[in-house]
Image (cartoon, rainbow, N blue to C red; front, top):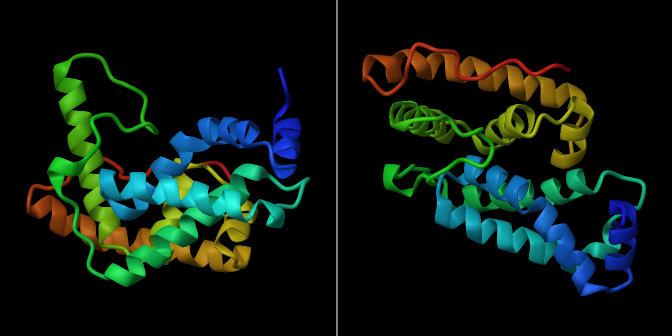
Length: 197
């Protein structure tokens, strides 16, 4: 069994099969990031494909010794932010939510599954209201559990800016929640679970 470093080294040397193995390894995290950022399963699939295509074309910019997942998620996050900036108005169609969120463990039975899907839709609708830089910070922190340092690398900014974005994003969510709850769109449970630093 080859180590990830060996697979990356072979991909850097032009081995397409090695790059294919990297795609298999990271397709779920890249798709999940794109889905959380864009709010649409179809757009997330397109964004994930584009992110891998860009990563393949830019393999020569990857620095061995750095975390490959952070480098790849940076490409995906930047692409999603660019896409959001182009479209500006984000709406989440309830019928476009994926059948199973790859970032969420499955729950047994029809009622818990329905409630879990409803909660995912509520979270996605709240995320869609945030500016793209705040949304990116929340997704990387709470769904990909990146450290502040890794997030700063991915988003090309400082740790201080990341902490500020996360703080501001949580403040905005706190203002959106009462309205969503009043409209019956959100449960009275915490939206984001704390992540250790």
